[in-house]
Image (tube, rainbow, N blue to C red; front, side, top):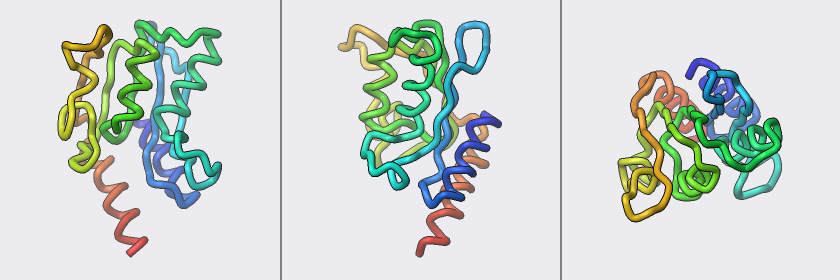
Length: 143
């Protein structure tokens, strides 16, 4: 989570919502990183999780990230939850809950939905205070 928080800070410095994400393989080696890039790229799908998943898939030469862990500072939205399931990510670790758009337990629980053929283990609230503080400070500055 420490690296994801650093990436979130870098996103904020670029005027992006401060969200950072890291993908680790089954051995714990970082194979992908990302931070929000929507504003800088003009790409509506450039959420930190999607950027990190793309980098991880490129690093290993496969879309299939079975055995990998995605660590992100904010609970994934519906799009990102769907992306991590499509990539067959085995475990999701996140910091702050997203009470407005979260899809891993707050508003929705797509990641663990038993109706879907793929699910991920979820570990929530890891360094939630630090992740929440980054978001709160960012939005206070914007107001």
